[in-house]
Amino acid sequence: MKNLELDATKRTPKISLHTDGIMSMTGKSYPENTFEFYAPVIEWLEEYFESDPAQQTVFNLELTYFNSGSSKLFFNFFDLLD
Image 1 (cartoon, helix red, strand yellow):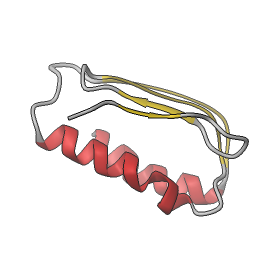
Image 2 (spheres, rainbow, N blue to C red):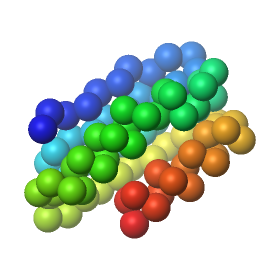
Image 3 (cartoon, rainbow, N blue to C red):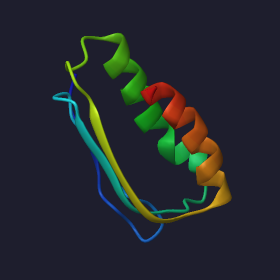
């Protein structure tokens, strides 16, 4: 399994998902199609937790703005992390 790195854009956050258990999301989140943008992130996390995850997973979340579409998706996202 490879790390996932997505660069920030004007409408999307920088996302770093590493197999060593250190992950982060920083910036703003208001993509045109929220679920389409975050699909690879959700898929990566599902695979990470189904495989052999790190003994400790740390997720740093620092969003300065997110829209209602993003907030709905984050509920699913947080369920995965739980």
